[in-house]
Amino acid sequence: MLLIDDDRDMRWAMRNILAYAGLNVAEADAGEPGLELATRRTPDAVLLDLRMPGLGGDEVRDASGV
Image (tube, rainbow, N blue to C red; front, side, top):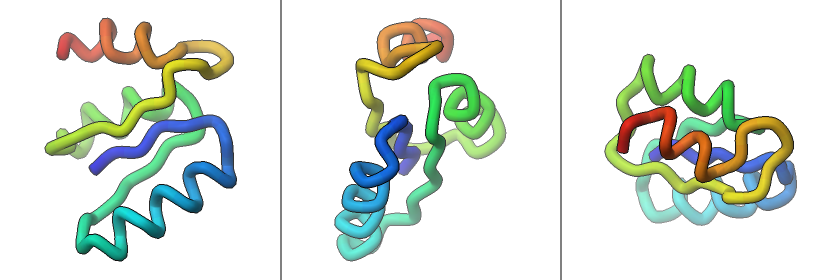
């Protein structure tokens, strides 16, 4: 699972919930680092914030080709 969110507290909460569910979680604090992680790790799923500074969720989704 790849978690991309600029809100540190939201990432912390979601990471803990997902890890408790047994998922391996990689996380990024912005769209560009999230795209880099996605190309290196090829996650099975992405949990993506739509409103972020820089690349927002829609731009990240479009750039990833998904």
